[in-house]
Image (spheres, rainbow, N blue to C red):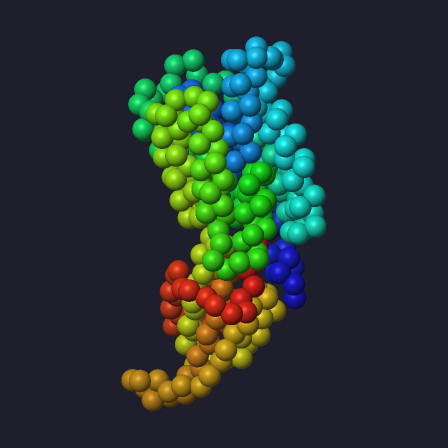
Length: 296
């Protein structure tokens, strides 16, 4: 049974709703906390905001009532969709398209307060980073993204076990904020870096596919059934061996598997379905070397 079948159609619709919710959280964080303070966001959105500032403030170019940053954000993402189709898949493309379009529409529709909600730059940088990072992480967790560098991050995360989406965003942002220092004010760039750090942390925290988990399952009933369901429903390998209970001295079966934190929640349901008295332990953040496929 393939992974998609294991989740079912309801799970797929939940993914689209989660992606839409992530886009809303991102847009709210951007327009309510980041933009009012004159800060710049991550990746493609940050590039779009900087371009808008240059075009409107220095070259006095406008698109009427349409946000230049929203239009540029949508346009720049079109060039990255080819990479998403060829390297990651059509379902990821559809969810990413949903996220990108929603963000572009929402940042144009949600009014940016003339006076900041919180008149404290550091607080706005932190809250804005948490909100936008959470929104991005929700989209990634749903199997999509907010576009831009998230697409590149997903691509490289699939190629390397040591890589994460947040790390790539942080690297690219370093280049963006050097441009901010050259074009604008050093203090603005510093607060933007603080925003980027908190955003990156929240992306990796919410996007649980990037967190590796070791699982040990001890059962006295049917370890073989659990092993088979791990392979069929999660598309993961699992090792099974026989052991002896310390207190009872009875035969026990032990199943060992490594998977993502997101898949660990599914594994809990599998184990409970087969043996609700099984003893299960999980260890997060384990280092992995060798043949381990990162599921995105």
